[in-house]
Image (tube, rainbow, N blue to C red; front, side, top):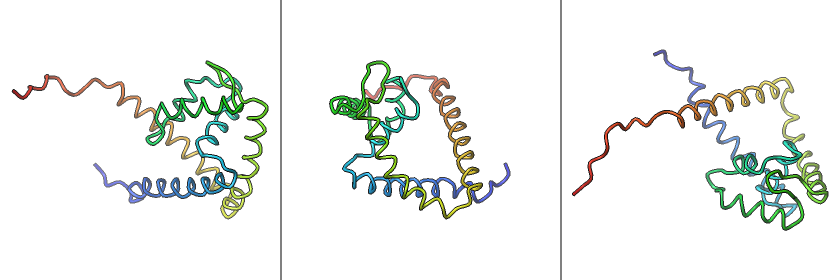
Length: 160
């Protein structure tokens, strides 16, 4: 097998550092608005993938290593109690939720433009396309792993 280009080994750490740094910046901006990032993510997903976003799809996208299914359920329950979302199988933003989402989006837009304006738009477009393609390929690879039969063919002996 040929030696992979050095950028292959740099990719994961560069992407991880960028994600952590950007997330910290987003958290700081949202904290100024007394908003948790998970609230922003949920509102953003519903606004961009809705109306009528399937609760199951929203929940599966929101679940992350530090944000489990119980946390997602609690978040959606709180957003509903706060009058920001409505629906059972399909979720929509209420007028109050739309107003909050719009306000948050505007408050984040300035820092986003300031950050990204230092880069060539063509480079940014290439980066977005590349990351989308990598994500899609990684999802396909994960699905293949999830669907692969177990490698364990013999039952394990129990210790007696």
